[in-house]
Length: 105
Length: 321
Image (cartoon, rainbow over all chains, first blue to last red; front, side):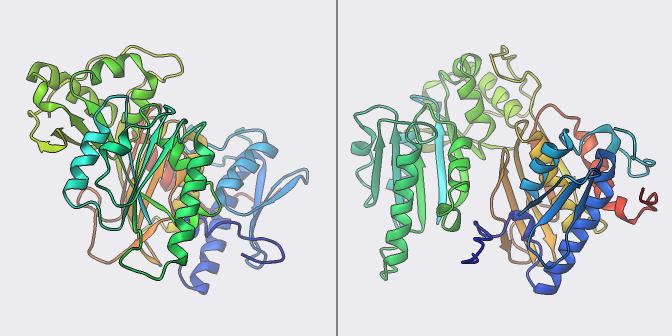
């Protein structure tokens, strides 16, 4: 834990366990951001991770944004600022060949 | 330290089962924590064989006794860290819950504590079920159902006292309530064989207040090479956030760049994954596969949804607006 900012408060989040080396960790962060960026537009949200500052930012198109430490916090923040729970079992995610999800909300 | 949570309804035979395990070598390096909802504890007398025994009386570890429970475990962690004597070191904790405790809430309490999360891994939830009264409890008590739904292992106790006609419907119902759990029998703590219940149908249980009516199903998902860990973890974290009340357990072994990870969750809470050696433990004899146990969703929708999360970023995306 960093003595200045207190981050992270707990040992690594379970979603970060899949990468053991620094290059793998960085690659996993960018890939995670890529997956989120593909999923979120249908909910009017965007995700950003610059790979330097710990955490992920979730933002609305109107500029409301929150920085969170891990994916569990991310989904809670996305629900709070987006006004809707992002449910992977939503029919919009039922088919990998589905068309543009923008505007389907 | 590995924590085994031993749950079960009031009078389900938890202490008898645990006492038998203690007689059969569960003593070394094991701390037994007994939680009783009543002010005057009794079970500690029965479990006196254990050299390390702690009693929490007058409150259930999942609700009123939660602070005392957390404080006790923190003390255990402190002693363990300060101790140089490896022979005396505690490597395992067995928590016998009160009959009124929800094991899921106890796991949640441990995982949300900033100290305990560094020291304790929940290895197994064992729930005992009374062969004689278990079915009746499942019909009447929402808590009894929650305890069964969340178990990794169900021990049907007092098997010797129950007729086969009583036992079969109970076993069929337990299998329907928690298809992912291993079910075994016991009498006075020793293992007993159970009648074959593979084709036994479940007894219809009445809908209880605050209880979902849909049956629990276990779905196995094979994760192929096209699904990477980042996409999988984004998907599973979203799924548990959105559906954590309906998804009782997730268990599985997933291949990642860091190695084979053993993944386990209890409702919303995912334990820190353990890295397994190559060629070791598998789930259902499979590698890179997870089992999702829950209700209220179509099991067939899980894999397409996971594929969507994994494949979507490679699809052509509409231009930004």
